[in-house]
Image (cartoon, rainbow, N blue to C red; front, side):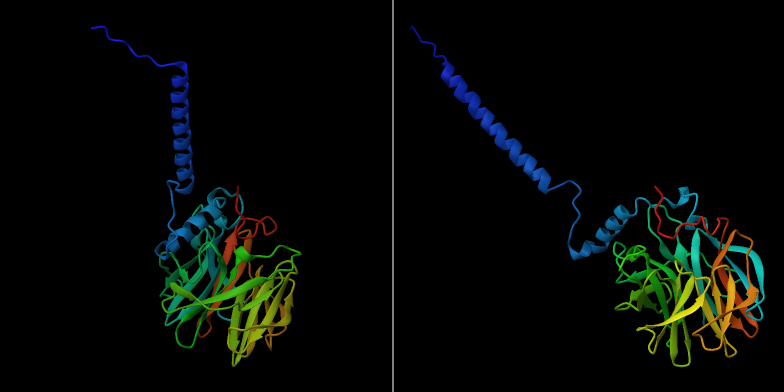
Length: 341
């Protein structure tokens, strides 16, 4: 039987190759498009992963915060304390309470001291607010805790310069400056002071609205005498302390310059007199809290920088001052929240 063998013509071969090419092109396009829409590391946008998204955003934002490798800055700051019997003459303790911490302040609640500060001990993150407690008038302290503020996303605000205030109901209110919203010098934007409250001193809840805003202000400090709340804020550019007043501790109205020649304020009212402590540490006094006069008294710790005082009354003729010390020169120390590349 003679069987005829069948072959392919040139035209048929070309058609087959064209079909294969079209199928391959379409497949590559579909695959590539899917890869663009569905990356491997997809972050869920559901409400259950909101905090994770904020942490990721904060991490991406703070890659430059290599605190431990910075030759200057708050990583090299530490907190010490001094004592006094009259608010004017101070004796240094010679002790360091905590390192990699700055801008401290302190209150006394039910016999326990609550000290708050800016914590920069963790590389790769912007500033956090830390807290330590003491039940023996500052002789010994607990380990540091990082506080939380519900309603403040880590990607939206960076609270610094904490000022704790003990409310009549026993809660602690912290006034703070949001350094992430800091306005540039010459900008029309204003720096803003916010607040948050807590029942345990660790877990805070953000309060609505802004407490106060003004040009180039930092370091809030709140004092209440009788029915008047007074907020002091430092203006380092103008080297002055600005005063604002309120009837409820929430809405402050600017009063004017309370002191000139230094900033970073902390005030205490005792025996019918106001005492104002500023960077340096300079001590000024006032009879009305509105205008201060520099006294002959000052305090300097053992470090190259003595600043950011926080004064609290422990008992009759017994006062404690928490302060920042550093071996840096004041002119060489950059402001907080300056990432080091």
